[in-house]
Length: 383
Image (tube, rainbow, N blue to C red; front, side, top):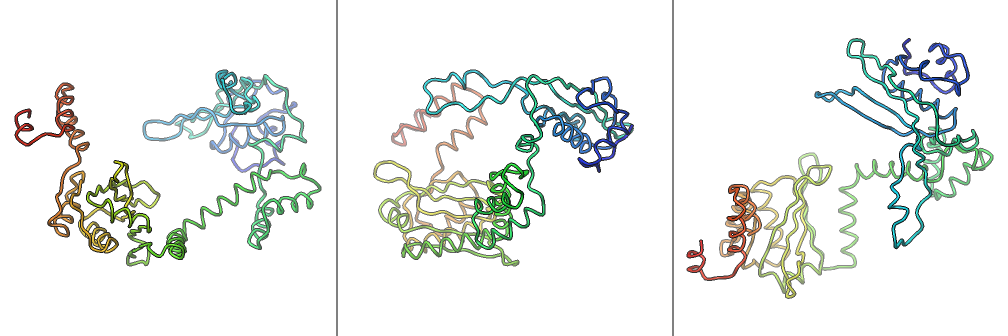
């Protein structure tokens, strides 16, 4: 018998009648539920979640299997007490704090559905209903993680109160007063904080560029040596940015004899690259001269970054630049710093050698040769 996904807690009894189950939920057996079908996986999940809420236990997502083309074929849901905690986490010595309460009771309750290719329906192939732990009463079931929810109307009211400057804890107290106590609320204070955090992420996604610029402008009020420069694209969106505070500029003035550009590609949601301009101080420790966010890695972008960097450092060029051999960066360095000695990073050379030559003895000897300091004639002889 097919079940549609559009059902709620109120018509759950009607769903059971359509399934042919007229007895009490606690008496449902495996034979009575296995073989029943649902229109989609969401209907099966809603059914098991509602069943768990009525019975008095929480739900977690279990096994998930997909076909070679990425199509979901098997889905299961288990009791929140499924599994066991490893004893080493409870007996670990020494501990700084007491271990958390054990919530996993090795419960075997599960509902598993398979997708039928011919009909595109989801059929129940496994159902276990015997718990290894006592069930909760309806007064406590609403506090389980899988059954907590902030209603839409309550959430909108809370958002309006938060925009008015009311603290989240005060909003929670007001909501509890409206509903007749904290035990009458279908959510916890943590859930309200999580909802507000999600809202902040959406707001930051739209205003993060302007807030980043505003942060640097605010920081310049206390640091008159802070340098920041950025560009916009045709749609007035942030394109590239470079900045350095007063400490970075002072470090470059003392230790700017060598420069090592270190870039991380596509490490954020916008696909931009982070470029860190590094150096070494008198203690052979890494020191940072500047940061840059790049929208691409072509020659024009590197020219803009290096020009801005030299402007930041009062046109003082380095004696040596060490790169990974990027062609676009090499052309920008040769054009803006013709007198600077340009060398390749020994780590990248060793890495390329290990890819090209699959001989462990050669790689070991090559690494020793690269790491030692010797004259050119000695190097040629050993090579």
